[in-house]
Length: 329
Image (spheres, one colour):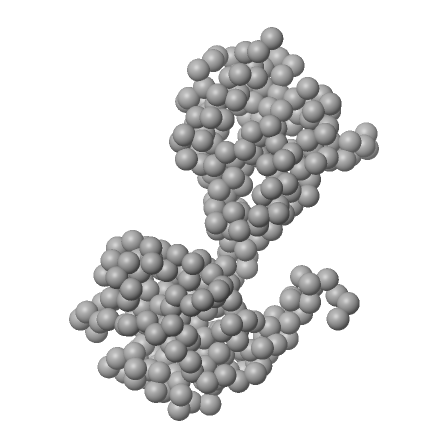
């Protein structure tokens, strides 16, 4: 009752891990049964001892399709499914799934599906909303519309229905994909890629010479807390000429990690130190995971001399900002 919300949520998630392990064989056995259509699978789920929300939780984990992705799926439903249904290839033929509930009113949350924390321990029957999500997680990557298939690329488990050997091999490989370590490595790789992209864009589009652009660098005198005993703060990109410096922080988020929360927490102290020293700081921010954290985003914008996204017109504005700073007497 008195724990911080984040810690409470972690505890709730951990408490259901034994239940997921206990029911894994049931989940696999359901997928191993050959069916001619998705309605046949729904009948098997209803007849099994595995609750619908537990089945869906297993599917969500294997598809690496968490709460934020579910919310985006619902809020952007019509752009993902412009025809209003899921047309996909299966059993060498074209199938059509007609959605019963999606898009649903309000936010599509884990809680609404009964797959968050301790609610997962409360057995739920298969609902029309469960069916809609299951269909997407099974066959999304097989969508006939290319853009839909690309967005739902990890939703491919339906290809292994009724194929126990292939399903087992897939599950072993999928463990690597959905592990936290691999997820962290993927996020780190994306972060490096976006930082290199911004650095290269500035180098190629800046219309003044003699500006040094460096990755993972420092500003003279700028430390973590301003205390002389602290280490110098490392910024994603630093542009400099002589005694003038601009720090550029880059954040692209498609995951549920808290990179932007950390950056926002540091924003004020960094900004105040940088202001006193006569330097500047800018942020390049993109990714739905960042935009959904409105409070953190507002904080960064407030404690920034320039905030842009990754589109070229915005990056051009960043270059203009750099040029104005370095050419103004």
